[in-house]
Picture 1 (tube, rainbow, N blue to C red):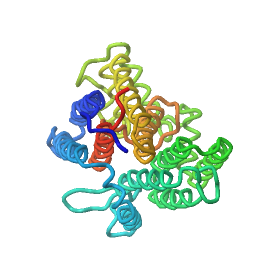
Picture 2: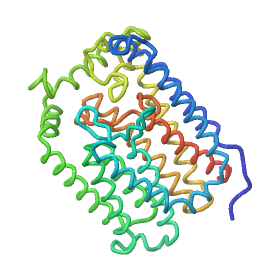
Picture 3: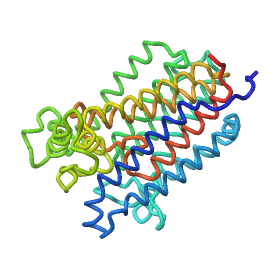
Picture 4: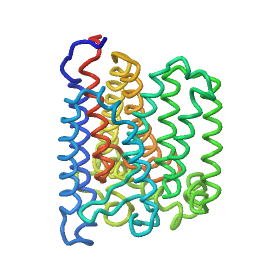
Amino acid sequence: MRLKKRSPDFILFLTVLMLLSVGIVMVFSASQYVTIIRYQNAFYYFERQMLWALIGVTAMIVIMNIDYYRIKRWIGPIVVIAFVLLIMVLIPGIGKEVNGSMRWIDLKIISFAPAELVKLCLIAFVAFGLSKRPGLVQNFSKGLLPYLAIMAAAAGLILMQPDLGTAVTLCGTIIIMFLAAGARISHILGLGVAGLCAVMVAIIVKPYRVKRFLAFLDPTADPQGSGYHIIQSLYALGSGGLFGMGLGQSKQKFLYLPENHTDFIFAIIGEELGFIGASLVILLFMLLVWRGLKIAITSPDPFASLLATGITCGIALQAIINIGVVTGSMPVTGVPLPFISFGGTSLLFTLMGVGILLNISKYTSPR
């Protein structure tokens, strides 16, 4: 039996709003020069990010007030729809190609990335399945293999876009959910090794990924080619020093650092706000993870606990990968920084996930 409703987790709510505010300000600061060049409008990306933020916060508040138990009845149809959309994005004429990747469905008014919907749907699906028969998770063939097959199908379709970063985030999140559900450590270690091998194969079969991996090992070997992103990102971070150059004072955003308002926005944060500003952003993510895991631990039932774990760890993994790439700690891959990078679909579904977390927090035990 679930506990009586309480107020949603205010610290989590405030943390998300703070990250969102940082994102809106930094999207404007990072993108104003490039939007003047491309669109003759310094507010082009800022206006769109503001619109998506308003839609996302509205969705978060609505979901926060809808009992998370209702998700169960819609899990099956939504997962099917998500997979259909994931297939449709690969069809020429439906999928929109940007920089060699087909990750978006062009709806004329907006572009929609199905992979973001798939991540949230699979987290809910796996949480529901594992919570129905909790003891079965220790049986590999009956407890894990069915979910691994579905995860592999989704990851395979995402890799065809191609989007290795999102596929890794999805698989990592599901494996963490297996661990949280009580899977055997030997199974988790085996999946970890298999996942690492799969990532290496995915890198080897694509020459541009091999170049990125080699650039990760030694960016200066090809400073004008595969190592360019990392070098320019490190220049930005190094230029910021302790206190930063000041908001709006970035030099790297003047077409030196590519994707400075999306995948590499953290580098602009480091350049303009310095080590202190970048550290505060990381601390906000750590605070979010703490509150999310606290909600998972004090959740009233296994479904809520696994759902909260999956949403929290999905956000955490995405942030770790993005910051790892920007700081040269991981090979370059296109993963946005949650709440901060420019991108409507990612922002919307991340905020919807937080809405579910906040709803679960209303039923947690007060400890």
